[in-house]
Structure formats: structure tokens, C-alpha cells
Length: 161
Ligand SMILES: Nc1ncnc2c1ncn2[C@@H]1O[C@H](COP(=O)(O)OP(=O)(O)O)[C@@H](O)[C@H]1O
Ligand SMILES: [Mg+2]
Image 1: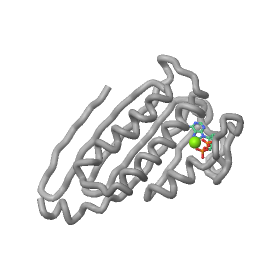
Image 2: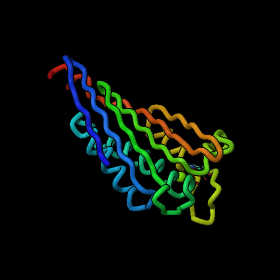
Image 3: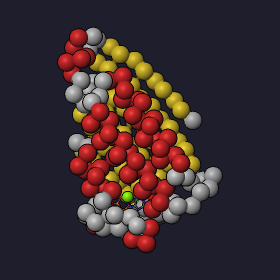
């Protein structure tokens, strides 16, 4: 399901997009490609696109592999929502999986609960490094929401519109 709402007003650009998909690994590529396409009208640099794709990819992979323990099923859904306000992108990735007991610990570099799957434990560190803001909300048994913000250098472009 894809829902797109767009409007622009004076010098403000606003756009929103929401998707939901099943927790299967193929959809990690779908999610990062969708977000990259969503920001394209704002003229992001290649580096900005690459940062965003990496962060989305890590968050979606976590939802699939950790949140739903890699199990496919009609109820195992990942929600992705994106919003642009002027030159700021907000991305949210949500699952209703197992949740995280100790968020601070989970966010430590190299920490992983799945070393057997060759996880590097660097997912949250990458999200933090490549985005301007990262917030993780989680409740054991309820699921996890990852909220990220990326500022794009397009202010001058908007001013020329
Ligand atoms: N969506 C999620 N649901 C449940 N646990 C999660 C989720 N995302 C991350 N985690 C927990 O946080 C740990 C660290 O995540 P991350 O930094 O991406 O490393 P990795 O994915 O390599 O284990 C994971 O090993 C897992 O225990
Ligand atoms: Mg990870």
C-alpha cells in the first residue's frame, strides 16, 4: 500500500509518504529505494542519498531480523513513513515485534544479540553516523519505532522556486 500526499505553499515544500510491507528481506531493498526516490525531487547529493539508504536499510533489516526474528507471516508487518518539511527529511520505521529490553545497550557499537547471523552490531551506530538525529522507542513485546532526521542542503534551491 502506498499513499502519497503532496502540497507546496510559498517557499515551503511538504510531502508525506507511508508504506507497509511484510517482513521479508527482499523488502529491505524496496524500502531504501522508495525513500531514495521520495527525496529525489529535493536534489539531494549522492552522499546524502547514500547516507539515507544505508540508515533505512539498517532500520528495516533490524525490524525484519530482530523484531520479527526473521519470520515471514501475514501479521509481521513493517511500517515506513517519510515526511519532508522544507529541507528536512523525517523517516520512521516501525515494527510490532519483540521489542528491545535495554535500548541504551542495544545502541552501543558492536552490541548484537545475533552474532550467529554474522551481525556486526553496528546498525544503530551507522544510523546515528549517517543521519542528523536518531530516536529509538521500544517496549518489550510491543515493538520498536526508529525515528530519524536528515537535513538536506536544498534551502537555496527552494528559495529560487
Ligand atoms: N527492531 C528491533 N526489534 C528488536 N530488537 C532490535 C531491533 N533493532 C535492533 N534490535 C536489537 O539491537 C541490537 C543492535 O542492533 P544493531 O546495532 O543494528 O546490530 P545488529 O543488527 O548487527 O545486531 C540487535 O542485535 C537487537 O538485539
Ligand atoms: Mg542491525
